[in-house]
Image (tube, rainbow, N blue to C red; front, side, top):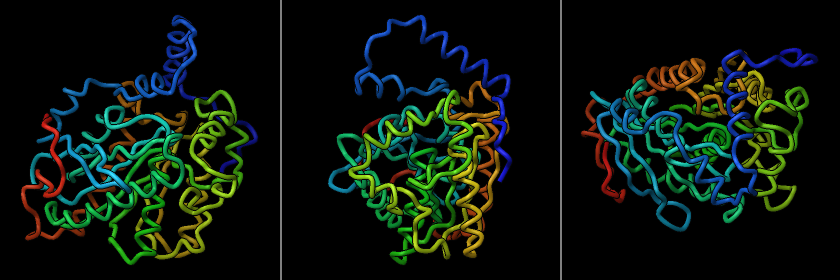
Length: 338
């Protein structure tokens, strides 16, 4: 674990980006934000969706089963032979973001990995508190397992921030339930430790996008009681064992209070005999993936995850099991393709 006595400074491009965001914020009227307004503003991509869609063969708006209703989802099918399928869960502290905010990320993951990507719009807090999002994602994963033969068979889970947490949780649930078998888990700067503290939380508590106060606010929206912060379905580090988990690729921001949660979780996985690798992008802050159109590190992190998916899913692909990979049988198309 790095010495965090002196916090690192964000890189030049990150400082320019943060400065521009601060300037724009100062130019706008300081009216109180409603939850609906927050969600509307933060479910926007950083790059035109139509241009991102050109990178893949097909984009389909559809629905996937959740805990108690059908959930909006979006399927991304790459050009060429499809090697496996990835269930992707977006970040946003369980409170905001959605299919649009992560559209470009999913297009690039699908193109560069050669796998189909199903992005899921799980139920958000505070209307739906813990563990509703977990239950939604688990139901969608079990359904997707029944459709995976359309893409060659292997399945992976992926997500950023809260979505990375959900991917780690699903990996543990699949192991404990005896399936579905997951080829790997791709986690971008996930929250994994719950109430357990790490040095990076102190080093980057303020001034690095994801502050301690903001983390507390997200928790207030999502959890039911403080005991939830020790539940493995919210804080995977509290699982009785980290043995037998699918291989983890964990991509991290350096100037992020969650940084040491990623490295610490990987170390505990390896100690238990599971495979885990991490990479940290110097000078970046939490959420840098969403600014890939401006930050080279964001594009590089997408490529890093996509290459790990490509290597793993192609190794497990079933050559004679794949169809055209464009139409999940029980999904409900919503009439959009790109």
